[in-house]
Amino acid sequence: MIITKSEPFTPDEIEKLKEVFDVYIKTVIDVQKRICTAGMDRHFEGEKILLEQGSKQSSIWGGGVDLETKSVDFNSFINIRPNDNNTSNEIQDAEIRKVYEEITRFFFKEVL
Image 1 (cartoon, rainbow, N blue to C red):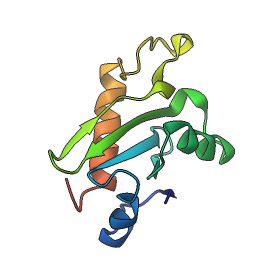
Image 2 (tube, one colour):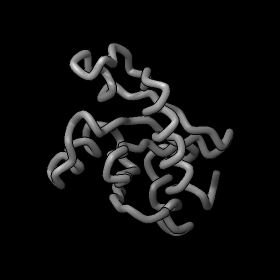
Image 3 (tube, rainbow, N blue to C red):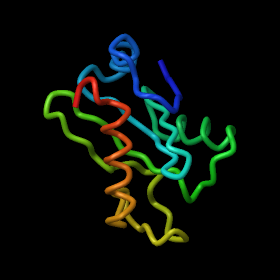
Image 4 (cartoon, one colour):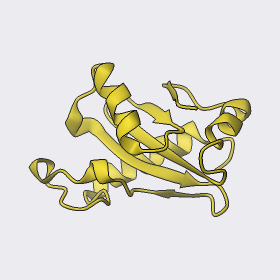
C-alpha cells in the first residue's frame, strides 16, 4: 500500500507500509514541500505520484527506512540525475542527505 502525506505516519499506517518488504519501507520525499510517499515496490511509483501532485523533479529524492536497524538510507535509482549533480543512486549532496534524513525521521518518528 502506498501512502502519501505531509504529516507523520501513524502506527496503523506503518503496519500497512510494511506489507511490501516487512522490515524495510521505500520512501520518496519532496524535500521542498516536505511530502512523503512510502510503501511502494519501486521508487518510481512514488516519484510519479509526487510529480502528478506538482512536485519538481529536482526536489524529489528516494531512499528508505530499515525498521530492524532503525536507520535511514539514501539509495534509489531515481536519484541518478547528472543534471542535478547526482551521478549515483545515493544522494550525494550532504545538505540534501541531511534534510532527507530529518524529514524521514519526522514521518517515521513512531518507529525511528
